[in-house]
Each structure stands twice: as structure tokens, then as C-alpha cells.
Length: 163
Image (cartoon, rainbow, N blue to C red; front, side):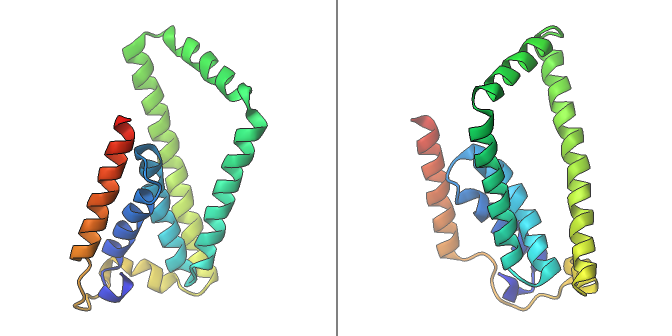
């Protein structure tokens, strides 16, 4: 995708595809967002190895937490649910989503600042800051095989969600 010169479009498209590769809507949602950060990490360092390592660390952390917390995670979820029920369903949903939005915004800004610092340390800060202004090279970003693969992926996710 990078050969097209459309770096922003390449980042978004590869991130959407990264999310789709998980083949379910839940993992698609956070996978696509994580894909943006991983793509920015590749641009900041000039190496795909850093995004491989970051992805492996994320997955390893998730698996370790899953086994370490066991039933404690369900108990915490029930406790939080009972606490939020005190406020009523609508207010609970608003408070919970507001919390998630604020936490997401804070950590997204923090992640972007870290990736920019990495770009500076790697001597790629100027390239990184000029990503939105990259000149187009004439190659196509969206192709027929890509569209077909995306349709198949979404079709599978819908089929899987309905089962």
C-alpha cells in the first residue's frame, strides 16, 4: 500500500484489514484501532519488526491476564454491574461510555506522543510528521481482489455472529 504514496489511506486500509483478519466484530473493532497504532509505529521506526513485537506483547498480556484473573474478572464485572445498576440503566450506560471515551482519548493521545518520541529517537520525525502530505504515486490503493477479500471477511463475520 505504501507504494501508492497515500500513506494515510494505506494506514487506514491496512488497519481495517488487520481488524478483519480476526474474523469477528468484537476483535475487529479494537483490532482496527490497534492496527492504526501499529502502522504508525512502523512509520516511526522504519521497521515492521517493532509492530510485530508490540502485537506479541499485547497478545501475551491478554492471555496472561485471562489465565491469571480467571473467575476474578467475572466477579469484578458483576460488582461493577451491580454498582452501575444503582444509577439506572440509561445513566449507567452513559456513565460507562463516558468513562470509556475519556480513557480512550487519554490513552490515544499518550500512545501518539510515545510513537512521535520513538520517531524522533529513530531520526524519522520529519518523515512521520509529513505523513498526511505524502505525494500520490499513481498506484491504486483499492483493487478488485481487495474488495472481494473484504466482502468475504465481512460475510464470514456476519455468518459467525448469527450462529
